Amino acid sequence: MARIVMKFGGTSMAGSERIRRVAQIVRSQADAGHEVAVVVSAMAGETDRLVNFCREANPLYDPAEYDVVVASGEQVTSGLLALTLQALGAKARSWLGWQMPIHTDKAYAKARIGNIDAEALIASMQSGEIAVIPGFQGLSDENRITTLGRGGSDTSAVAIAAAVKADRCDIYTDVDGVYTTDPRIVARARKLKAVTYEEMLELASVGAKVLQTRSVGLAMKEGVKVQVLSSFTDENAPNADSIPGTMIVSDEELEKMELENEIVERQLITGIAHDKNEAKLTLTRVPDLPGAVSNIFAPLADAAINVDMIIQNVGRDKGETDVTFTVPQADLVRCTSILENAREKIGFNRLISDTKVAKISVVGVGMKSHAGVASTMFTSLADRKINIQAISTSEIKVSVLIDEDETELAVRVLHTAYGLDAE
Ligand code: ASP
Ligand code: MG
Image (cartoon, rainbow, N blue to C red; front, side, top):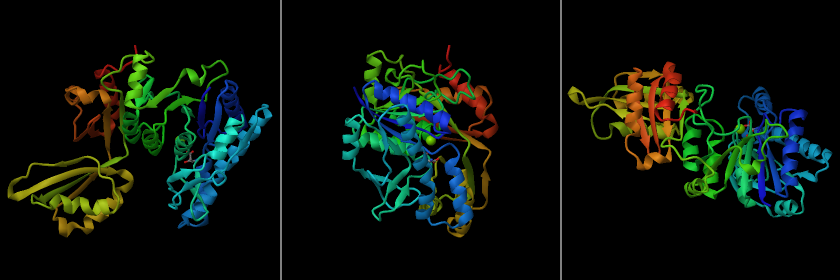
């Protein structure tokens, strides 16, 4: 017997038929003798619809009232799932964010969870009642409803799993796990049995959008074992206890799984991600002097614009140089205007931007102890005449910036080069 937190995303909760399937999955875990809490998202599309209403009501909406509106989608699905479970003969009740409560700060629309009073919840789970909890919502110390930012139900689930010290947090979605790369691009992408928190953070933040990035960070901090798996299965599908999905765990835990032969031997590279939401900026003829680069990046940091890859060319004659970097495409307009305003102070000649770029990243803890990962990447791309515009690396990741049109080709070439193709 274990204590399990299950989370179901919007597509899993979209309509009575889907909710009935979810209720069956939940009940089978309860019938297996587990203590169960379930965290639910709003029905697919519902949060977008509610956000639109807020915009229509007042384009400069007050985030606290926005939270009152958008938190309602999850209230509906939590009540409906409790009702459906009861219809199946299970004991179930809903617990709204303010009832536990799930304390957050007062950054409305993007609140962070503080502590969760889980005592009553644990007692109810121990009594054999299934707890159904709306994701995405919490309570500020001003006693008002908050929400956690889009995709926040994943974070709710992990936070609750940590608070009740769950043995596992199963995140049910419309894909059956985390893949070596996007299966829509590479038909021979393989489902991974397990990845580490670190790898998942890199994969999530570079474009493999399975989980809200913040939820993975929280799972790592709290040591919550997370499984990503599909709710789009039939009654004969393997039980979640047999780990049909992908486990996201610590390095040590993963090694243990390896030893127990639960996973095949690890590869050097775990996955390949792509991200088309970056923009490249180049400032030409920046003075090649101490402080020049700081004049560029300090105002961007003040504006909370996340700069990713940075290249400074070797100075040309006359003590000038070019500086190239990437920012999220969504911040490009703001970024350009900040730099234009600082033109005098920075002292550049031209500002060139390009949104037709893609970042391709190879990720794997295995590269910590192996040389040659980057060179395999560069050689494979060169063989296909794909030009690299910028490079960045971390301990477990190498990223390159290329022409957006070459994204699919690059991902396929690298997937093969690192031996990731399924037989
Ligand atoms: N319903 C919210 C959203 O769409 C939270 C979630 O589903 O994770 O962002
Ligand atoms: Mg989601």
